[in-house]
Length: 508
Image (cartoon, rainbow, N blue to C red; front, side, top):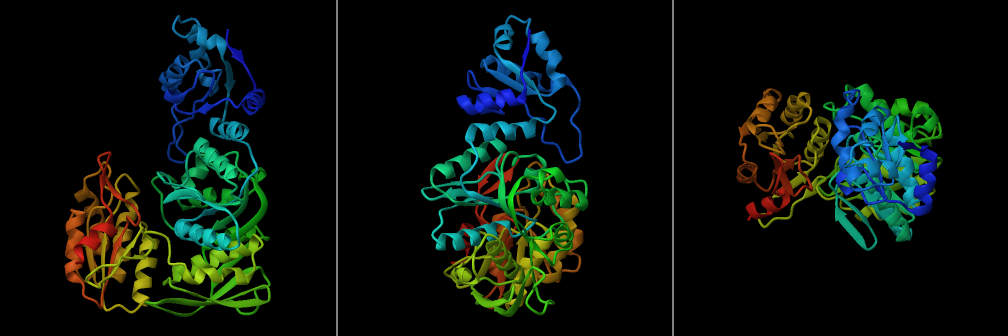
């Protein structure tokens, strides 16, 4: 006989007894709870409705003698048959079964019960580009105000006394709740989190209340996962909407949204209380709730902004360059204002040199202008290259590739972005994953048709060496696509490789 329970009853038990949760069948603790999650399939693609798909996971979990199972109703017949099997009969009889129509959502409820709520105010930063740099800016500003801060993002998860490299931009639901609980124990009062569209769609942020949210932009990306740009936008928009609107909890709806982005403009109409931000084209004191910026100067040494909001005006100098970094600076300030900061609090950004791998200058003995950037979308490439063009270098040489097992349709678009703004394109391998690097490069080549000079070299180290030999001290070399990454992913194996270190070695 299978003993069924409600989610609320299980939630109360987990909260009261601190019963460990697991979503991996091999990590179930005796007396713990196993939540069987559906496959993380591309958006809109339904999992096959076959009970046997999760049979092995359930049987492995039962071997650990859990106190409860959470799984879809279609597995009930399987568990009824296991109840009479000698191997599993005792385990099935000793555990409660919660039938769940939405296991990912219910995992968030149980994770919140296990790890607790409260603690740091959580600001989610989403968008195609600029998430990492913006969270770093917010971290610096709030630290200068005496706050204890935490960051969860593409590069690392960190707070005072702790730091580790990230494997995902936004961790899985259980790990995310655990990290936030550890931040709470460490006394963190503000956490800044990069929130990917995959994480929103897969409900990795289920059970978490956000105090604030920021949209940097929405440009073409991840269309191997989302059916189209409209689905991509709606997924991002869920971070700003209430649960009643199909979104996530927002404690006080402190929101900042890119007012120049077409999708941001749509979102602003949905959220009249949000602070918009943008450059130029807006005179006056932005009484409509828009933070207005204007670039006063921009070059190799950085940029200087004038900013207006709600009858106040101020200037900000920054060592960063590029219009996209001006927008990142405005976004960080807009969210800071929404969270109660004052214009004078942003002066600390005047020495913010940027996040690792985000148009990061590579010091070298040869004195060359070498940069690495994480740009791996057409828009991100255009923005990074436009920044170098605006800085006044004689020529721009770009080394880049495209990732394997990702949206193939963006490959020629990336080539076109490089062709438009580069004097020389060195096409190479990025993270080919399970694809043939030469096949990936072949997909890119049509977009490079208008580039003055194209060199193809699949070996990334050899490609970087070629580029270093091509430039002199009046030129700029951009190695794009990998940024902070310290590896190349080839056929499931991570091979140590960091653009920054290789370029420093080559530019002797």
